[in-house]
Image (tube, rainbow, N blue to C red; front, side):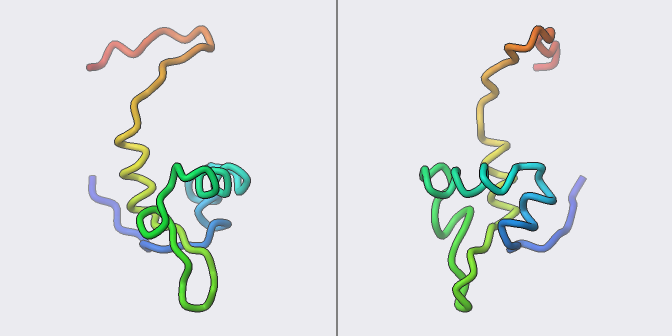
Length: 77
């Protein structure tokens, strides 16, 4: 399914849409997990903006570490 949405949003809106806390988003930026110019950038009005499409791509490319909460592993491949 192809979902269309706004490409660039504020960190606050990104938190609302993704479920990441604002602190988690800021940590990903400060720790370099999200690259400037890819997942985030400074707009001309000096506001930090998050690229939702690139955040989705970042999540999709991440390897799952597996659950440590007693859940069964997924049977899908």
